[in-house]
Length: 158
Image (cartoon, rainbow, N blue to C red):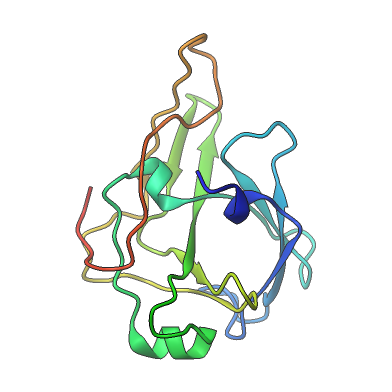
Protein backbone atom coordinates (compact mmCIF):
# COMPACT_ATOMS: atom_id res chain seq x y z
CA UNK A 1 0.00 0.00 0.00
CA UNK A 2 1.13 3.48 -0.75
CA UNK A 3 0.66 5.67 2.30
CA UNK A 4 0.66 8.77 0.09
CA UNK A 5 -2.35 7.61 -1.96
CA UNK A 6 -4.57 6.72 0.97
CA UNK A 7 -3.22 9.23 3.50
CA UNK A 8 -6.21 11.54 3.15
CA UNK A 9 -6.52 15.27 3.21
CA UNK A 10 -6.30 15.40 -0.58
CA UNK A 11 -8.88 17.18 -2.75
CA UNK A 12 -9.73 15.50 -6.05
CA UNK A 13 -11.48 17.43 -8.81
CA UNK A 14 -13.33 15.54 -11.54
CA UNK A 15 -13.98 18.14 -14.30
CA UNK A 16 -16.46 15.75 -15.99
CA UNK A 17 -17.84 14.33 -12.73
CA UNK A 18 -18.16 10.64 -11.94
CA UNK A 19 -19.63 8.23 -14.47
CA UNK A 20 -23.38 8.86 -14.45
CA UNK A 21 -23.07 11.89 -12.15
CA UNK A 22 -21.50 14.79 -14.08
CA UNK A 23 -22.43 17.26 -11.33
CA UNK A 24 -20.34 15.43 -8.70
CA UNK A 25 -16.99 17.08 -9.33
CA UNK A 26 -15.28 17.83 -6.01
CA UNK A 27 -14.26 15.17 -3.48
CA UNK A 28 -12.04 14.95 -0.44
CA UNK A 29 -9.96 11.80 0.07
CA UNK A 30 -10.14 10.98 3.79
CA UNK A 31 -7.88 8.35 5.36
CA UNK A 32 -9.35 5.52 7.38
CA UNK A 33 -8.95 6.33 11.09
CA UNK A 34 -7.90 2.76 11.87
CA UNK A 35 -5.00 2.82 9.41
CA UNK A 36 -6.51 0.14 7.16
CA UNK A 37 -5.69 0.19 3.42
CA UNK A 38 -8.93 1.94 2.52
CA UNK A 39 -10.01 5.56 2.38
CA UNK A 40 -13.24 7.51 1.98
CA UNK A 41 -13.93 9.61 -1.08
CA UNK A 42 -16.29 12.21 0.39
CA UNK A 43 -18.34 14.38 -1.96
CA UNK A 44 -18.14 18.14 -1.55
CA UNK A 45 -20.77 18.97 -4.18
CA UNK A 46 -23.13 16.27 -2.89
CA UNK A 47 -22.50 15.58 0.81
CA UNK A 48 -24.34 12.23 0.63
CA UNK A 49 -21.95 10.97 -2.06
CA UNK A 50 -19.34 8.99 -0.17
CA UNK A 51 -17.38 6.01 -1.48
CA UNK A 52 -15.04 3.52 0.12
CA UNK A 53 -11.88 3.25 -2.04
CA UNK A 54 -8.55 1.47 -2.15
CA UNK A 55 -5.68 0.96 -4.56
CA UNK A 56 -6.58 -1.58 -7.27
CA UNK A 57 -3.25 -3.41 -6.93
CA UNK A 58 -4.11 -4.25 -3.32
CA UNK A 59 -7.08 -6.36 -4.42
CA UNK A 60 -5.65 -7.55 -7.74
CA UNK A 61 -1.82 -7.61 -7.77
CA UNK A 62 -1.70 -8.02 -11.56
CA UNK A 63 -3.92 -4.99 -12.21
CA UNK A 64 -2.51 -2.98 -15.11
CA UNK A 65 -4.09 -0.12 -17.00
CA UNK A 66 -2.91 1.63 -20.13
CA UNK A 67 -4.05 5.20 -19.47
CA UNK A 68 -5.18 6.74 -22.77
CA UNK A 69 -3.22 9.74 -24.01
CA UNK A 70 -6.27 12.03 -23.92
CA UNK A 71 -6.83 11.16 -20.24
CA UNK A 72 -3.17 11.80 -19.41
CA UNK A 73 -3.40 15.18 -21.17
CA UNK A 74 -6.66 16.12 -19.40
CA UNK A 75 -5.10 15.30 -16.02
CA UNK A 76 -1.92 17.24 -16.78
CA UNK A 77 0.33 14.18 -16.43
CA UNK A 78 3.89 14.49 -17.72
CA UNK A 79 5.08 11.93 -20.30
CA UNK A 80 6.83 9.65 -17.77
CA UNK A 81 4.66 10.48 -14.74
CA UNK A 82 2.62 7.60 -13.31
CA UNK A 83 -0.96 8.45 -12.39
CA UNK A 84 -2.46 7.45 -9.06
CA UNK A 85 -5.34 4.96 -9.18
CA UNK A 86 -8.18 4.06 -6.87
CA UNK A 87 -11.09 1.67 -7.15
CA UNK A 88 -14.44 1.87 -5.40
CA UNK A 89 -15.38 -0.87 -2.96
CA UNK A 90 -18.89 -2.14 -2.25
CA UNK A 91 -19.61 -3.86 1.06
CA UNK A 92 -22.68 -6.08 1.40
CA UNK A 93 -23.39 -6.91 5.06
CA UNK A 94 -25.47 -10.12 4.69
CA UNK A 95 -23.58 -12.25 3.93
CA UNK A 96 -20.45 -10.14 4.31
CA UNK A 97 -18.97 -9.68 0.85
CA UNK A 98 -16.75 -6.96 -0.54
CA UNK A 99 -16.24 -6.28 -4.22
CA UNK A 100 -13.99 -3.83 -6.05
CA UNK A 101 -14.91 -2.00 -9.24
CA UNK A 102 -11.86 -2.71 -11.41
CA UNK A 103 -13.80 -1.86 -14.59
CA UNK A 104 -14.23 1.81 -13.65
CA UNK A 105 -11.08 2.98 -11.83
CA UNK A 106 -10.47 6.51 -10.64
CA UNK A 107 -7.29 7.87 -12.18
CA UNK A 108 -5.77 11.09 -10.90
CA UNK A 109 -2.72 13.28 -11.01
CA UNK A 110 -1.18 13.19 -7.51
CA UNK A 111 0.46 16.57 -8.09
CA UNK A 112 -2.61 18.67 -8.98
CA UNK A 113 -5.60 16.55 -7.86
CA UNK A 114 -7.26 16.44 -11.29
CA UNK A 115 -9.16 13.17 -11.60
CA UNK A 116 -11.44 11.16 -13.83
CA UNK A 117 -13.26 7.87 -13.69
CA UNK A 118 -12.67 5.77 -16.79
CA UNK A 119 -14.50 2.71 -18.05
CA UNK A 120 -12.13 0.02 -19.30
CA UNK A 121 -14.68 -1.51 -21.69
CA UNK A 122 -12.37 -3.98 -23.45
CA UNK A 123 -10.09 -4.77 -20.50
CA UNK A 124 -11.71 -7.92 -19.18
CA UNK A 125 -11.79 -6.43 -15.66
CA UNK A 126 -15.07 -6.85 -13.76
CA UNK A 127 -17.13 -4.21 -11.99
CA UNK A 128 -17.53 -6.64 -9.05
CA UNK A 129 -14.15 -8.24 -8.42
CA UNK A 130 -14.32 -10.24 -5.15
CA UNK A 131 -12.06 -8.86 -2.44
CA UNK A 132 -10.44 -11.37 -0.12
CA UNK A 133 -10.29 -10.05 3.42
CA UNK A 134 -7.71 -11.73 5.60
CA UNK A 135 -5.89 -11.23 8.86
CA UNK A 136 -3.51 -13.79 10.34
CA UNK A 137 -4.89 -13.15 13.85
CA UNK A 138 -8.63 -13.21 13.17
CA UNK A 139 -11.16 -14.37 10.61
CA UNK A 140 -13.30 -11.34 11.46
CA UNK A 141 -10.87 -8.80 10.06
CA UNK A 142 -11.75 -5.92 7.76
CA UNK A 143 -8.24 -5.31 6.44
CA UNK A 144 -7.02 -6.19 2.96
CA UNK A 145 -3.84 -8.24 3.10
CA UNK A 146 -2.71 -8.71 -0.48
CA UNK A 147 0.77 -8.03 -1.85
CA UNK A 148 0.70 -5.99 -5.03
CA UNK A 149 2.38 -3.55 -7.32
CA UNK A 150 1.22 -0.84 -9.66
CA UNK A 151 1.73 -0.56 -13.38
CA UNK A 152 0.26 1.89 -15.84
CA UNK A 153 0.52 -0.31 -18.91
CA UNK A 154 -1.36 -3.25 -20.34
CA UNK A 155 -4.79 -4.29 -19.18
CA UNK A 156 -5.71 -7.89 -18.47
CA UNK A 157 -8.07 -9.56 -16.03
CA UNK A 158 -6.72 -10.90 -12.75
